[in-house]
Length: 327
Ligand code: XMP
Image 1 (cartoon, helix red, strand yellow):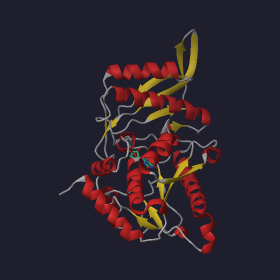
Image 2 (tube, rainbow, N blue to C red):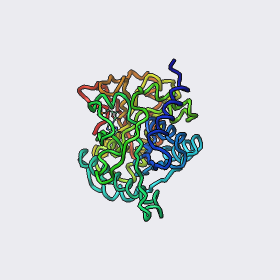
Image 3 (cartoon, protein in one colour):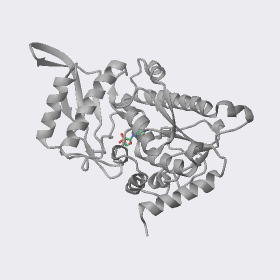
Image 4 (cartoon, protein in one colour):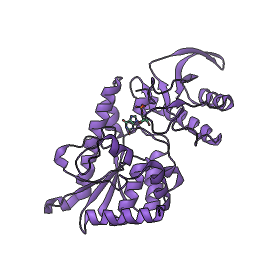
């Protein structure tokens, strides 16, 4: 019979068999559910021979770094290397507004950060010819089906955080979740003692808040967006809507200004877009009918609490024709 406990147990045994008695593995953590559960399973199987790598690119939401550094580590005891890459990412992204260019820059910098982390993991061992042989990925069954069923080769989704790793890294992939669906992954994660904030988390794109700023990415704009995003998340959760909403991107229209009146005078600020969607698998989505009272609270709080934002608008477009993210 299928229980989270015996699934977890058999997956752990499989990982032990694949990695062997002295193999080293590395896993990029995005803060998302899949990579966290995959890492937790592999950690149970091989302990400290797994190193988790978390790249803080400065494009994260409020609290995400702490979730990985504190909550994930506390729950699993996993070895974690955090790469502080905020300055590098922001300087590479300086002045870039085009969405695809942003994505390419982020993908490239991600790989560089990851490579740095691999050398750090090996340290002195590199001199004795030791290598990190295995790369752990949180690939799920739907991803396997989408990419044609292959595994063991480098069929890493370009969407994925560690997408397009250079071939000379030559990792063998460990994909313990490749036969599971999302709800099963969450069940296994709970079984392994991961906190609800990680296990029940809504999807968040690898390129992070950079693709939720329409216009160039700056530290100030990220700060505004982070505040608005946190308010929307707090209020949607408080209203009990998490189960109904697949995800709710919050988007800063940094290249748009509109006239407002706040306090004693005229303002000329930016709009924030709320994009709550309901979906089964993100391939299609419907805009979520969030109650007006909840929208009102979010709108009032954002315009009061977030500097330079004087308008909140609601995206009422399904996918298709709109994608979930704006970029
Ligand atoms: P779209 O915008 O294409 O998004 O409707 C579909 C789902 O994918 C997420 N998304 C990404 N996830 N890296 C990721 O890991 C990415 O580059 C990326 N782009 C979009 C998006 O949040 C939604 O859940």
